[in-house]
Image 1: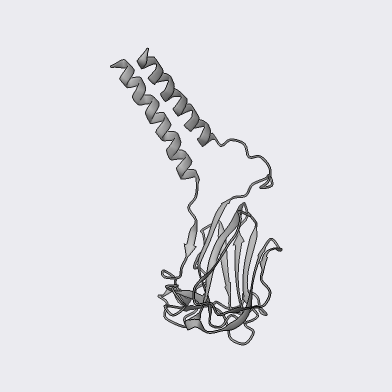
Image 2: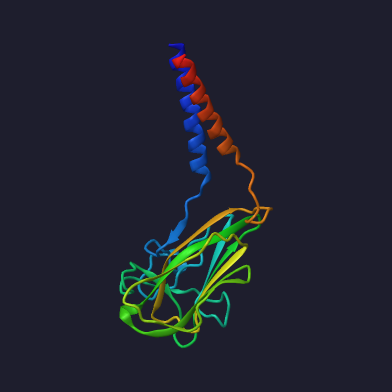
Length: 223
């Protein structure tokens, strides 16, 4: 009976460690615009402007939607539902050089990482544009001018690069080019560069202690 009790305690400690580790890993936020709020905080209809609050993380991140590259952060982007290949809904920019810019600005004490996004043309229309992504001013992607005329969705994904600010640009024209499934994460700002060894988190130590305890109690029970 006593051996069973010890075994249970060891198992509980191990499970607690696993739960702490799971909770420490924040899930990515994915913006597919199906739940977007539009100007004034209401629901979105085709051609509505996406509200500046959409995608924000309280006290951690400000998402700045701009439909005109030449006038930064002055206007929202537009919302559209079905019609951009298989994407359920998208954001898009202005015609004739307006472009589109989305800035993920981490607030003081936090960092942001852009995981990726999808783009697609409206009903297979052909547009000349480029796709550019900057992290703290350094280029993560710059396609140059290309034809966006694929019959499917084009996905862009990025290695884990934490920054204070990440900017996504489509342009100089982004009319009939939709962007969706934008994934990103936030975290507390780290003092060490990402390429330096990171100390073992306390949650992992707790998990290791639980597993060791479980193994020890099992060995005691068998002796």
